[in-house]
Length: 444
Image 1: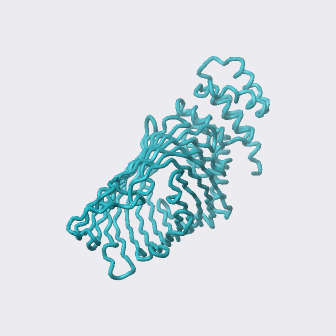
Image 2: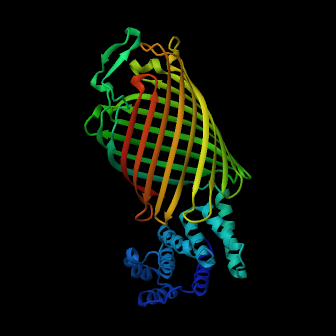
């Protein structure tokens, strides 16, 4: 942007003069600092980056690496280094200023604005304060303009699924309608385990029309292949498009949703939906969300008897906490119902009540731990054929994942997911454990 190059050089010089090394500077750091002072950022970066695996976490090294990366056109790498530095030097204004610039160059205007405003609240020199205001004005202009932002990702992974077909572990069950006759289930109706491969890709578009209105759209595609039982291979295509209106501390979103599921590479189910959501930011750390969702589910061929309309409403609360590991937690509840569109099959309809909780811990600048748990109760509305009772399910899902970022825009995520569906109908009573590891690359 116009005149920003002059401002940038002024800020970098100010940052270098303001920073006092916590450790005695060695030859590598002294040479890197001279190169940065001489505006040879690329040479400084080339000098510093080979030592990253050994020296990441040293304040002096991280600070110089962050500036060298930023002025070499590598803002994402600069963010990693500067965040490491600020983790141990949270009150260092010059470093926070550089982090704000890095976010700005990445297009992360909201994060950039927050960091600039944090520095502005400190007692900064007049020239620096004026430069900050120029950035903030530019961010306001970006927000108000119609410039679009596109992000994407690709990921691939492998793992093991203890119950690929979500089936009971029992090979024989009693049928009450036939006097308790013991029936032997077909192999496909009994739990099957398998190794698996999976892949996915997606894209997201944000197009602001003004400071208050923005268009949001996303699309994703994915496939899971079971090595031992290809008939359970499952794929999906989903997409959504909607508008978001921001008014002060509130955001209102309306969106159209679509999803298509493939089983064994054949069309299995399509879902069309409408989502309405209200998000209220209580303050910088607390947020409340309320939403409603209408969905129409259409199955293929013999499964069309299961066609249904699904309705959900829910609320959630999330909060970020200060302190070590920067904890983030959320909790939510929802309720709804699923109504079959065909008459004479009330046992396919159900009432739904659910709870969700979760959170994350930032263990370091490149490692994050996340955990989630949910419990859903489904009470069905008619006797299950053959079992002479109304079906009732209690499903619990628990997941734990560790996300490691070996480099900017890359992530490696090992994950375990456990599911237990406790049902009073033996055919629907099952447990399942999935062990997964996924590699993801994002694109800005």
